[in-house]
Amino acid sequence: MKNKKKNRVKSFLTSTGMGGLLVILPVAVIVIIYKWVYDLIGGWLAPITEKITRAIGIGEFVAIIIVVATILIVCFIVGLLLKTGFIRFFTEKLESRILKIIPGYSIIRDVFNQFLGRNKISFEKVALAQPFEGGALQTAFVVDEHEDGSYTVFVPTAPNPMGGMVYHLSEERVHIVDVSVSKAMTTVVACGAGSSSLVEALKKKKGESTD
Image 1 (cartoon, one colour):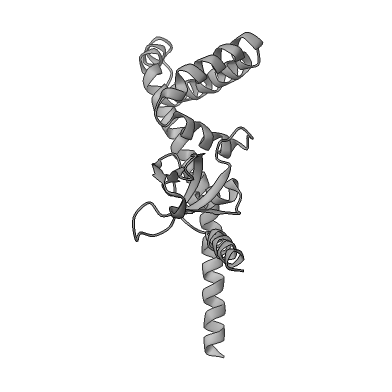
Image 2 (cartoon, rainbow, N blue to C red):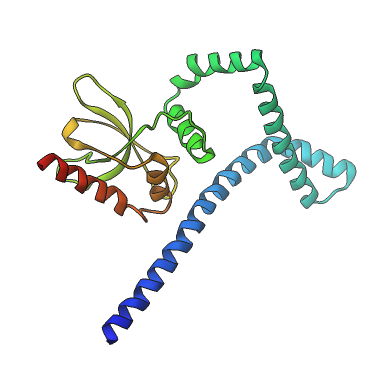
């Protein structure tokens, strides 16, 4: 009876803690990204804001508001320009001829698209990959499939999927699982919480192959 009650309390604490973790971690990643953008643009605007604060006599807090407002205005203007035919054509050409050549650009773009809920994403398949001989399986996203049956996969780091490693692996080292990209990405952000769905999908696949 005591063990049953103890297990019930343990299960409650674990599920409650993991539930909170699934909320906090995505928010933390978003905060880190926004802070990076703020520091970047804030650094660019520092000479201007310093002149404004000296000329008008406003405080540091108001200067921060100016920076944030500038970021939002720039994002809005860029988004508005992208709606015009000529600018859209220009950016598509820029992306296809220059930006896609930059290492990591496509991966970062796809991750952002995934978080924003857009459909234009090259991560079409989820896999459990084994980059190293005898090593553990790792959550991976299939980036490309080759004629010889091998794969190129992206293994993101947790809890920040903006970074990771690209591996070129043989077919036997990549186990495609029937799990959605968004669900797999959520487990990465949550430091592995919820990965049981990937493991179960792999067990189910192996079970079907042996039948």
